[in-house]
Image 1 (cartoon, rainbow, N blue to C red):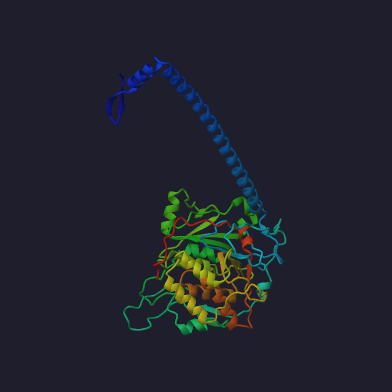
Image 2: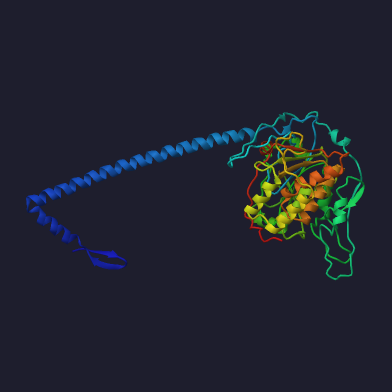
Length: 458
């Protein structure tokens, strides 16, 4: 007998016993037939097994081929929109100030603004870009004239706050300590001084945050057209603007600015994305922000998103444009979605929403073409604005709502716009909502690295 190993032990092989049994069978006719039948069965089984393996392999090959063709045609469709020229067709030709949120990292150029068709309700579906007309040349590009006819009034900003009481618990805040009366009065489009971030405390108190060195401030001060984005808390990968899709004219005349904190810069550097001697990573001019004003990174990200006129005071565009959301158009739906996905503390969301309803926030009615907004929920990753008084006022008001309530800015967008419009009927604010599919033709959205649930955020 032979020995074989199992679980580390040498055991007697049973093959000798089996051979003996078959030998005894072979001495009779019955044993001979059984032996021949067993051999024939073995040959048939091997033949069938080979055939099944062949059929299974062929089926898998067909499925992979079909999947590959599907992906090819889908990529072909998307590339049709991602390789178009850079200059948008718009009358008159305009230069612009563009702000990308931390979700949109591939800017191209000025956006077409247009009315938005309401999307039909139903199952969640894939969304694709649509055609956007581009000019083939920058020849004849001129300064926009329409924003020069905008409402003009003087806006000043609260620079610092004195201690409001002798209470030793007074703590300076980046957004300041705006009273309810000050908030209500700030919605009037008039000469005024209002809270708009960057509020310092009394002498002797530390900075309230979002500190930028003087060299970077001087760079941003000179920007006439700016494309800006931000990553805080190492929450995203760095996406570089696609250089081959950016015209040389834009490279020479547009400031591409990426705001980072030290943590994010360190993470990006470890991944090979280090600023060069000019402080650039690709087309992005890296501006490092010290002393972040909020622990909530989403709320901190609203500073460059909403307050670009404080960071780029000399940039220009006509007057304010943002796209509609791809699925939702009522704030009611946005509230339910935020709670369903635990985007923020549910009680805080309810308090904000109940306050807005009590102050007249209506539901959007798609059947009414004269509604002031085609959608009450924006897709806020891509914003184009002029730094006109009304545009700056709207940006300040929207930021103050984010500072006062929750960092979910889609909840406060419609309320802020409608209240500003209601309180200033003689001073129209030129806010345009363009189609989400047009936004998709201009920028790509990428998921965050990872973000914890904010359900417990107060």
